[in-house]
Figure 1: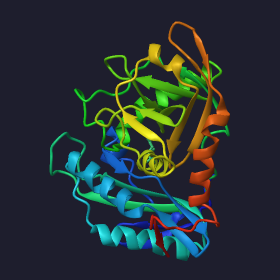
Figure 2: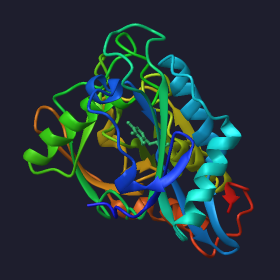
Figure 3: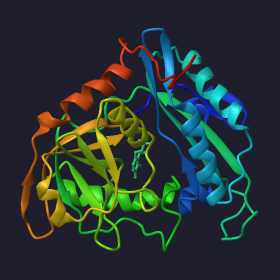
Figure 4: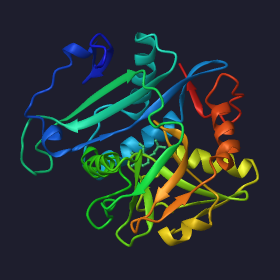
Length: 300
Ligand SMILES: Cc1ncc(COP(=O)(O)O)c(C=O)c1O
């Protein structure tokens, strides 16, 4: 349960979560016609700061443009609302969720028939995944670029993530790993994937995946640490040659993978220790010890 006294933002007003009512006729609720972001604020050495806020807001507006949603607020206003909500809720670290969706003006499939609503909430959300995870290749394929704009963070896309995640959990795994329509590795339900071997990182290329902001941050960090990074197509048969693997995402940060079970039942085990250096480097950035030399934070 969420604290119903949390101060949230809805269409120009700050109000308590319990008073932020929306109609059951909301288009976004029926069809998933909304776009959202998952952002984190951390308490770092010089105070509370939002991690890569500009990049998240840019992606929110990119997703909205693909869904033909016109966001009422400017990028700067969205950023300021996120910062203001942290202040109003006295939160030093938090998960921030902006959600923009088509309202209850109409239930048809007609562009322009609905107004857009903006909802933003901030709350405490601990790391989403366990410390280390066991993964199963999902029998469900990742949404295709032939069916939708799959690098937009559109609410309805998460039916795919939810179904794959439910299947993995029902089969005793922590997370699914989804393949694309060609059978190449795409990503987890809410996280991107990397493979590691001897200072070399390999990750699926952009286009068919959500271009994760943590993914981009890890690529930059890894290069600073002397890793080479390849963005390329990877197939299940290739992953046996890697020593380590990990997921990246705002909610799950860096999560080492212990094991991936392929579609034919073959188990591939990974050494979680090979992820340690990157995990520590990332943890330093988002912790109190961070020197913030990368200017990745927008301070409140
Ligand atoms: C499908 C999917 N892939 C990857 C990610 C990771 O993206 P980010 O690092 O920007 O949080 C997410 C997280 O929201 C996601 O939902």
